Length: 419
Ligand code: PMP
Image 1 (tube, rainbow, N blue to C red):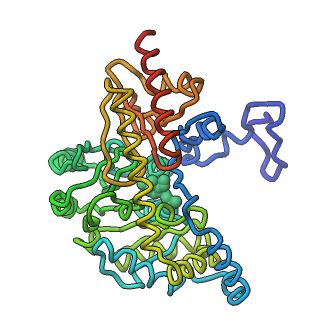
Image 2 (tube, helix red, strand yellow; image 1 turned 60 degrees about the vertical axis):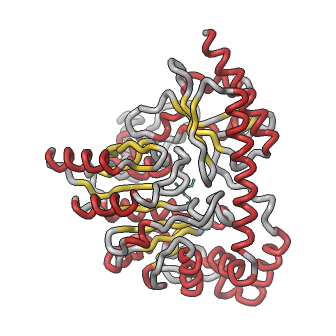
Image 3 (cartoon, rainbow, N blue to C red; image 1 turned 120 degrees about the horizontal axis):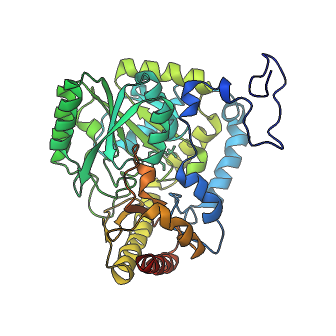
């Protein structure tokens, strides 16, 4: 017997002293497609204080009323401890589900508390929807580029991700129709259309109001469920939010929301809104995965929503991120005029196209040496495209740090052109 073929019930050998994984042969097929994201590998270096990280998507939490939140938590444990620290319902706390309706109302969504499933961040909702719909080899259609965390979920489910291009107005309806037609002709089963309609991660663009009904009509015609992932929708810098896809179609859309960007990701509370039958499956899938979402987190968020000015807090975040967006695009115009970039109307990210011939992934180690980090565009595609792009986040660093980061980046780009 070799170390690669352990006997059933044998004590797992430690990996100490060897780089071989003795369990390699034992993994399920889906585990072989799990890989560390390029962002994760980056975090270790990017978190060093001397590096300006334009890489991560962490919200800036200094502006939260931390003292008030501390008091709320303390009171919660003192007065409702036996509920807050107990298991709860798999679908989520009923009061919180009602409050979530108020949040979604701001984007035109009219739903019933029974339609809502509370999850451990919207990331878990993404995983649950994928689990209940996607068999290995099924197609998931997603924007090009798309959210790196969704790619991880789709990869783990052994889905084939097919990208559809977007432009300044979001996903292109004609391109979607063309792709779905070609897939239907090829006899491929398309299970989901995954889209981030508002302030896209990573592209920074927003699906225009006029395209929304077109996208829904095409998806409906091809019998494809739309998975609307919307953590940034309330973080627009101008005007009112555009009505959500779910507000236009209650039967063909599963909507994902989150408190991570408008409040705090550490609570890990997100939600899904789904048509009735799908919602029942989601609850069952969630129950088998986690039993129930955290009662303490849900009750803390519920207390925050009922006692604090959460709308005012979102306005504060919008102003803070708008100032940072301005710092980012201003610095790009000043220091990197040879590149092009999207100017987001909200959210956390801008998508930068490098001057011809440059490779964002190859350049990254030199950027980190120059004390600036970003995410290379390849992270956001299932098929290795995107080398000429990078995602720059302006959510976490202060405006001065953003300007300094872009200045450093421009130095790296200039050096690259000379290589
Ligand atoms: N979807 C998108 C588009 C995101 O950017 C993120 C977080 N970066 C998530 C989902 C997951 O967010 P959470 O699990 O914190 O709600």
